[in-house]
Image (tube, rainbow, N blue to C red):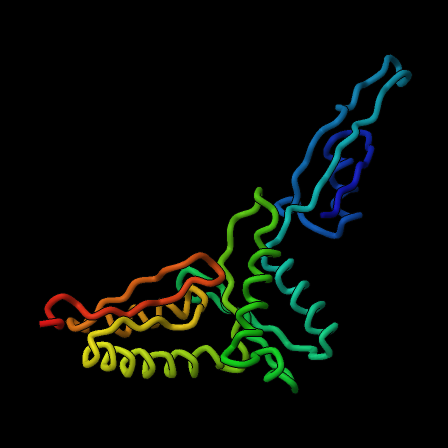
Length: 210
């Protein structure tokens, strides 16, 4: 977090100098007046104003900076674009070796997503932001795959009358399973366990057991 202390003849002058030094605007900072200016008698004995100006934490910028740094260190530099989708921000990653960042069944991408959210929301004073990482439309392909898997698993549960537990998955993927089977009266779904090992369990309903 960038922070400077600046003096000036007035508070306004000191703040203006601080903003120029930080290369930012007034709405992006927090200002604390450490000492107000005082006029002397006949131009003597006056005191300048002293202000402390702190750049507010930008969770999205922190997230992008983190991703650019970690992917570069992994040897997989990426281009990042962002878009707002309902209640969350999607950061789309693209690059030559994007499969490395996705990993098996999206495990690497999910791990990066968890760490990125931790970095973005590390400052409790900043507004909380929910970030979903995508990589060249992987999430859409994964959603379609999960929906098919949900239907297949529900049929298995219906015929065997035995519960089925998926492998642990992030909240956005668990939501796909729940929504896919929401209208299915033969089974019910619950999320169980503690993050990051929380998983979806499908059970036969009492009516389907008859």
